[in-house]
Every structure is written in C-alpha cells, then in structure tokens.
Image (cartoon, rainbow, N blue to C red; front, side, top):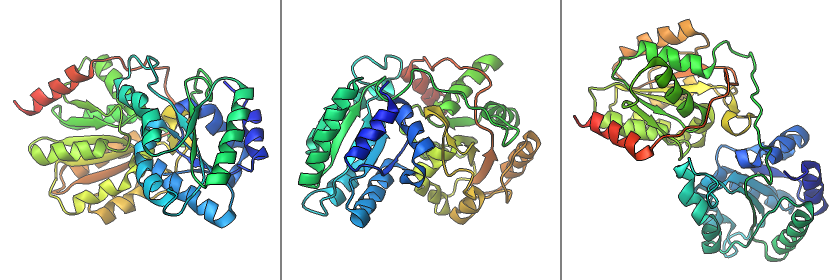
Length: 376
C-alpha cells in the first residue's frame, strides 16, 4: 500500500485538499487517513452521484479542484452528473476521481458481482471522455500521475480519474472495530428476526456483512437457504428487490435485512410504500452507523430518525428505534399484525463476533432455488 501521508502531501501540493465520496475496501487506507486527518474537508456522501454534486459545489465556491472517491461499482451513480452537470459543454467542472478497481482481471474469482464492472471500468471512463491513469504501488508513479491529472483538470476544467487496483490504496486486512454503543450485534439481531418471523419468510439481505451473516447463520442453524436473496452487489437495492417479490406474493412475509448506509444510498426507494399496498413487506434497517464492510467509516445512520422518515413514507412503525433483543422481538410481533408495510430501525453496535469466511456459493443455483420456491 502507498504511504498515505505522502499521498495526501502530494495532493495538497497541487491544491487538492477537499475530499468527498463513498468508502471502498480497496481505498480503505485512503479513506481512513482522510477520516483521521481531514476533518470537515472530508465528506462521506450518501452515494457517488451525491459526491459529484458536492464536489461541483465546492469548485464553484472555491475554484479549487476536489477529489471524489468511490468503488468502481458506484460509477453508475456518477454517470448522470458527470455527463450532464460536470461536462465541458454544461458547467465544466474539474475534479479528480479516485476509483477502487474491484474485479480487475482475475482478482475477484469468488465475487462474480464484480466481474463485469471490473471489465468495463476503463471503458466507462473512455465513453465519458475522462482520461485516467492506473495507479501502481509506487509513490513516484503516484506523484507523476497527480501532477499530470492536476494540470489536465486546471487546463481543461474537466475530470481526470486515478484507478486504484487491489493493494495500492488499502491494507491487506481490515480492522474489526467492535464498539459497545448498543448491546446487539448484527448477527444477534438477525437471529432474533429468524426466530420470530414465520419459517417461510422470504429474506433479502443487503450488500456486505448482512448477506454473509445470514448465509452462515443458516448453515449454523441447519436451515435451508431457499428463502433467501443475497444482494451481493447493487448496494442500496435490496429493499426494491424485496418489494417486487412482496407485491407478487402477498401471501408470503417478505423481510429486508437492510443496512443504514445502503438504505441512505437510495433512500427514495422508501417512498414507494406510500402508493402501494404491501402489508406483507417488512423493512428492517440494521443500523450500526457505519460503512462496516469497507472499513468502518461513519455513516449518518445514528444521526437520522429513520422511524420518522419511514412514517412519513407510509410505513407502520413502533414509533422509535429498537436497541435490545426484547424490543426487537416485541416490534416484530406488533408489526406482523399491521395491515400495511412496516419498518424497524434496529440499532446495533459495530463489529463482528468473529472472522467470517468470504461468501463462496453459486449465485445462479441460489437464485434459481429462490425462484423455484416462489413459483411452486
């Protein structure tokens, strides 16, 4: 991994001192250094398009080149603002894009959700006419790349991308940062949910730790996985997939095991229940106030009143967040009897009980089992 102190010194030398984006495991060295050292000059955004907008506003107000960081899976969220806000024939906004390159070559053999995105990452930049440099684990190469990028941004008032392959901006191991803010872990909360909802409940687990913990809890409990949708990619869309299932199968309980960062990323999806009849749909946010699967950087999860937001969107709630196993069990019982879609903000602490192995399963086999289950 590059020496991050030197990385930030290089950026500052070229006037790049404002950072915004969505944390990525391939960038966790960069993201954690920014978190520790940049204060309010580092803004963790709701999604990558949000970050591009924030960066544009920063440029308008300061004439300084900002840096937007993201995993390549989030590039899709940036395409609209890059093409219709930042583009030279519109408002001509220079910015540096730092992109973690998941799925490059054969670096993700057990994560097919990254394969196509990894393959098309340079091509997406080419299509948008954004020049780029693929970084190496060399501070000399990084310094030369930033010098070139900053000169291009200043001269053209357009973006330039730095693509970071595995190991360039991240340590090989992520810390398991366990806190005690709330008594329940995510694994404990999921187990309470499994214990208190009907056995045939369909579960949609969000990207990251929730998918892994549901998968391994099923194994530990000796239960079938045919009721489970593991949203291993497409962060923020698990609740939309679950809502689509719930609308088609009103006789089945459908529960989303969402994350706070994922729910925030596409929060507009929560408004759908205001105009749809889906009383079998239960949306549970496992809220640890962090982007845990990519390094534990803070989200806005603990600052938000998810319950009030959900009520405003048309969900039934118990009127407050739940923080204990007993409160969660009571909320599940109460909301299972309501005649409308329901929502629970389940406050949990950060960290894992132990180190979980990576998910290694056949995605087509898993989804076909769920499809067969839903269409019997």
